[in-house]
Image 1 (spheres, rainbow, N blue to C red):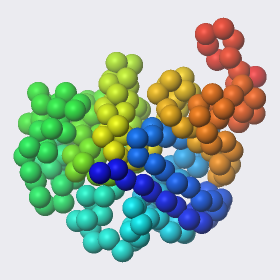
Image 2 (cartoon, one colour; image 1 turned 90 degrees about the vertical axis):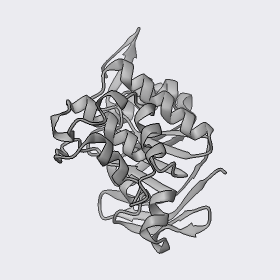
Image 3 (cartoon, one colour; image 1 turned 135 degrees about the vertical axis):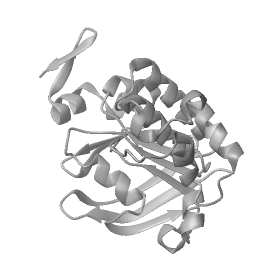
Image 4 (cartoon, one colour; image 1 turned 60 degrees about the horizontal axis):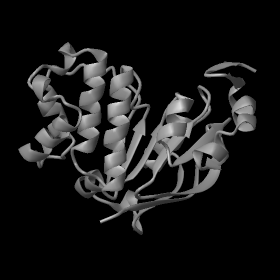
Length: 234
């Protein structure tokens, strides 16, 4: 079963200008923008965490869903990796299942990020990168139809950035709506089907990577330009 998220007239104070947005299953949507542009604000509003507007998943109002059903329909990963609870990584992943701690789902989620080997270790004794992988596993454990992630590649080495993007691609191909913020424009261009560029709390560009990340848009929004194989200040 595929999912669809539709957002109408969403806004968040002076952090996000009012806009409409639809996210479709099977599409990897990358959200990019300078620091403070509003990427996190957009994701949080889409997840129903504050802000104005109406969010629907397959025609159901997100705000009207009971907690257990909401957790099964939408998964959200925040940007912070500072959680240092003294419980096992495996138990932390199970918390994402809202009381129905199906061990098969937990083990599948750990396997998606190759974390079976440290599932028994305490969360507060993991490296930042390991903790990031566990937090991604928790977001994927419910098998939600909509998966929203704020900087899932942060704190990961280059190999694990690619692995995580491949795993998220598989979720999209299986019928999930997948949207994530990312700072690496090259990764956004190579791995995204759609790129949304946020500038000063508004959507400055939205489309295929080659269009949304054109030389003109990148130079205007980010103040950089390409020189051979690397970026330089414009």
